Length: 339
Image 1 (cartoon, rainbow, N blue to C red):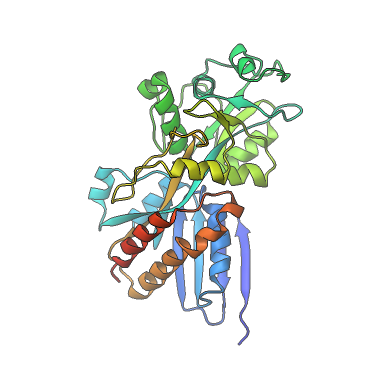
Image 2: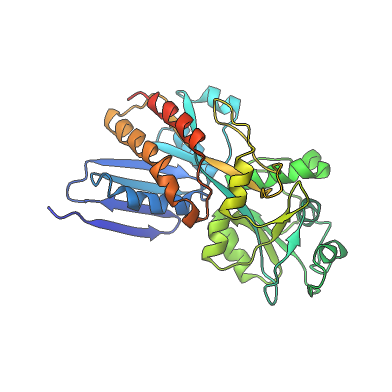
């Protein structure tokens, strides 16, 4: 029978049905919008490997993905923020963290003429604390000599939902600014300074708000900036260089990361002349012991493909591929999954 591939996007979810007439296994997942562009491509590509599997992934944010996994309503969750010890302890079974992509969080903005800006951590923190309110502020101007900056109010946009992208963003701000660390801190959901900016759901929502509102600034995985043709800043890194959030600079940051056995780690403000400072991994979260033997087997097979062959697609999707030594370590962890 001829195989059929159907792909469609509805709202913030992607469903890829492969070989509909013969499909025997449906793998469900939910969580990170950061990962959404990668999953969309991977699910389609995996149809050439195993046409008897279909996927249903809900791009609802990292917090939602963790909640659904804890409730055991999905086969896997996806999050750009590692689960905390207390959450892991309260789970109905042991949960494994498998880094699946690494990417840069782009600082996107909407200004007349689309100038290419340079920003640093203190200036970005000042914007989100409400201390810098105009685009022609002296601190922004000092970083961008020769650039005409408008006398335009800055509209900071942040995530309204539990977000791993917010975790990476606030983890970075906490690492470079003690005032931020002592007041707002880091997390998937934080108490944003009162009266600062607008809230939007999902990376899609942040990108949409920034694209529509003159003077807006926000943060989203690089793919959302590229796909929506939204300008993004070069950020000053720990070596003093202004770096673009491309796969090469994220790889440079990832290469410096100290990755423990449980794979929960941060890579913001990484050392290195070419490292992009607002970068992080995203994890697929799975139970070490699968409830459904068939789904568990197919999920493990897909994850093995994703952390090896799937990584070859990462650069074209604006992600950094996982290094081979990390892939090897993850394959051993995937082999430990029981089903």
